[in-house]
Length: 61
Image 1 (tube, rainbow, N blue to C red):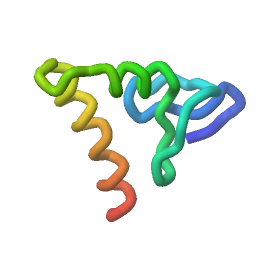
Image 2: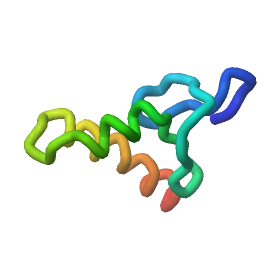
Image 3: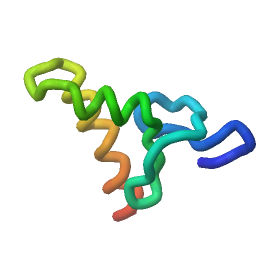
């Protein structure tokens, strides 16, 4: 989750220092910006939804 290289983003799996936490999961600034600007008709929208489901699956596990 967190190491000296930053936090692991649940969207892109890269380690970054800047971003937000939702529940206990980290989303980097770049992924957050891309998500909020992605139209619901874009194919990538469904990818983001699937990645965000990890938040609720891990919380309810």
